Length: 274
Ligand code: NDP
Image (tube, rainbow, N blue to C red; front, side):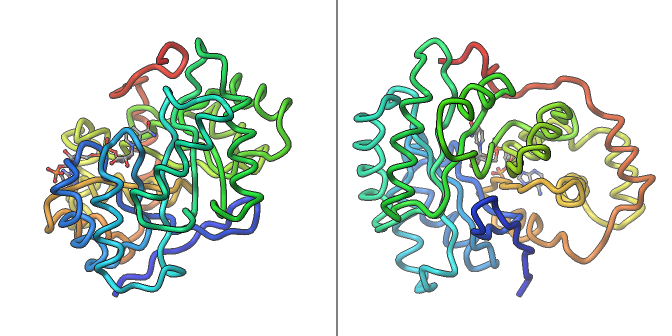
């Protein structure tokens, strides 16, 4: 079975560099998708309260029989639940739906700057971490300005910032900030929801290696040091997206993909999404 390398987070916890995302998968289909991913060899699953499928994830985890310590489960706090008390209650609800006594990573889903609550919210996550109910805490969709403010007013540097990141949106300044502060970069929509898979540069590299465009993009992420969580409900693609450890992109391939950066956002703008 494929062995996925681990990334060591800034608190020493290790996280698989490649996991499985379940955004937009209905709860009733999630159990089958996650079961298929676990069977293929994925051990890291990325969900969120707003996806409405934490129960489906939990059912697949329980049915798999895989020891809890071999799994890495991430979920996220939704914007409406920001604020210290609401965040604490929302975390309890997520754990309950997942059927777990702890998660491996708990993230503030968006900074939601107009709400102006992310600092208090993160303090609730620090308590959850201290209580051992999350092994690591972090954020998602935080820009440099949000990270700076959070780090000025709280005690624990986020272990992870999960952001939209793919060849069309390479987030160079944010990644440099992460590197400077020991924050792991996790890429959501790593395939740009398919929008970069027809790019000629990617297709050309894929043909040269005898792999698919999606595999080239995932390899580019891995060789760039990103954590990735591709989503698929198609068993053959689920397996294909994990089968990316048998080849390596050359420097020229990496440069070709680097040339595709073009401010292509498939999701909301974190500065205005609330
Ligand atoms: P991805 O970039 O992972 O793309 C998923 C799409 O690509 C689906 O339509 C899937 O189709 C298709 N696909 C998957 N594998 C292949 C392949 N090998 N060849 C061709 N097409 C393929 O998009 P997501 O937006 O789902 O992002 C991944 C994960 O990131 C999410 O599931 C979620 O966990 C996380 N995320 C986090 C966000 C945040 O705000 N923190 C926001 C958005 C996502 P099909 O399923 O039909 O096979």
